Amino acid sequence: ATHVAAEAVAEGVDAVVAAGGDGTINEVVSGVVGSDIPVGIIPMGTANVLALEFRLPRRAQAIADVIAGGMTRRLHIGRVNGRRFLLMVGAGFDGQVVHAIDSGMKRRWGKYAFVLQGLRAVMGDPARTLSVDADGTRYPAAWAVVTNISRYGGPYTLMPGADPGAAELTAILFAKAGRLSMCCNLLRIGLGIAARSKTTTIVRSKSFRLSSPEDAPVPVQIDGDAAGTLPMQIDATGQCVLVLCSPAGR
Image (cartoon, rainbow, N blue to C red; front, side, top):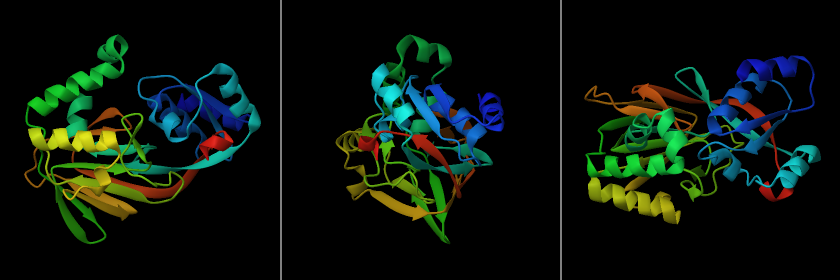
């Protein structure tokens, strides 16, 4: 998808439209970034977090109207260990969940694959020992999410007020991630109040370094896909891509 999108940009198209989920959109954006060609989205796939972030419609006529309308909104591009990302990087609990899901499970169960593996992770021991370095300060965490947007896991709000077009990232650091604590964390995310919890630390920066002091293999997810283990260097790039959206999505 990256190669096809880059070829389309070189040919001078008016827009590149991606039909798929967040992974497909990530690949297409990688072929478009650096140009002023906007990206349209036909929401498909499993979670479609980016489509929800921009309040994109799902009805065919409404999607066509958005693409034809030409109105755009900026989306900042982040970088993690040299790889571009659009949404977020999670280390610990959600990395463990995503690593346990294969493509067959996604096809059979869709979103419920994440629910099933999430329950299994909570019943196990989801807490990890992490260190997050930003602007000369080190923060401990049991679970960490560095996000570029406000949404998380679909319709849920993790970081209210986050601007996806700003060249800045936000780390949400959960101090506790044991069984009971994870149930509380997930409930707060569902209610959109996780950022206000006393056991959560919010850090805004252009650069984060995530590591495990014990050198344990802490699993990582990037934009909902399994992406190895810590350590991870996460940076704001200042690069943006234009996303076609409706006035209501601004």
